[in-house]
Image 1 (spheres, rainbow, N blue to C red):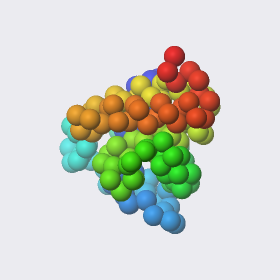
Image 2: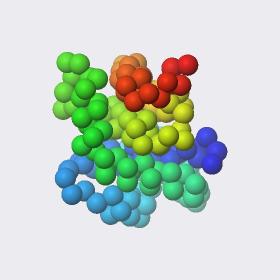
Image 3: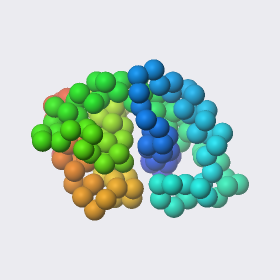
Length: 159
């Protein structure tokens, strides 16, 4: 899978998860079905359109997005606990929703996707934070994910 497909997949996962309130009992399959059925790039709330309406999301990007969404939904309590452990003086409720969503996706990759190098996860999260977050988002996301990467022994995260 090309890096571009993974970036598009991460951005789609961000949009699916951002558009929902993750609560106990959230059904990832239903979230994804609703997203793919109703998503129109021209109506994209988070940033400019990725593609034109006549070009669907590449299958590899869609598959990657679905894996990320399902993982974040399934492991949200663990992800949130992990983020809380490194977010000194920050409650999840105080975090910008976009930043929290990026952190959940990055934390899921760090904890449950051993085939993705930690440095790739951090770099991708930072780039997505630059595009969709505030001016402070990239450094905030980087700082927390770097601590998580070190705690979960993804030693390549900062090398």
